Image (tube, rainbow, N blue to C red; front, side):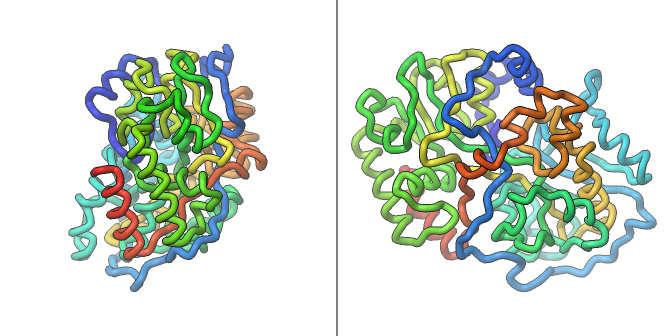
Length: 411
């Protein structure tokens, strides 16, 4: 499911009635139950070329003694469903069991992140005051990782302790604008934003302009309340790169969105709760997160995830070490361990998200040959060319663009 906004209670009920995402995807690969349309479904990312800032604005805020050698432990907060689980006991994570056996480091793993802003809000005051947050690893989506790094809340990696990460990070995820030297953020998994269509209600949607103007879709379209996803599509529809645009470009794209709202083409703006409407056919098409649509597609083969001609938006969730961590070396050992292609393949075999580790595809062939060929997990270069990443924003841009977008959607 999408990582940006937590599911509403209604959406949770819809998805809870479905088999697990892992079971669904593996079953579809075996039986061909889900029709992939519109080209690429996933990519590990593309190098941005915008003018966003990168790195802490004033360096780390705190100096904390690293007691990793004496205290062989790590506290790790992550999103739900983002780590392999034992078939009989979901509380047991086989790769973490193997990590402890290998290193002697005990990892206290908690899937307690439901929303970027919510979790950041819980820890920012303590971090700003150099107070412990009882976490040595946290996972944030690109845009929040940018804020975390910029505010000096992220500890810098020691290159000697993350050598496997530096060696095996997918080439497509290197030189990202908010962490160009791979010093603060290690991609954990990635996800995609495309167009979800219920072909039982309307024919497939091949372009963003179709979504915004096609008469048969009027009043049956939803867009996302996540500014980067929706405005990424608006920018692409005007021929602009979401990774490199001006304020004038943003304003022009916003006018296109406003026109679609004013005409009644767009029904409303949503979080994950578009899933019920798409499943029921109350809406025909929407800007959607890949995980949601894939889940629905296994229940109803008329629901498809389409890559529009303009491309798809990619986001990554990143592992970061808070500056207040007293176990930074141990945390780096965890990061480095998960960049072993064999370990990365074991995780990817369970979570089925885009894998950021070079060499994991070859290891996956030993675990699940079908999954190794799945573009949702291991994309090729042609697919990556269709993927766009929203540029990092300065604090002033963040405030300005968010205010304009929220005004446009009535938030």
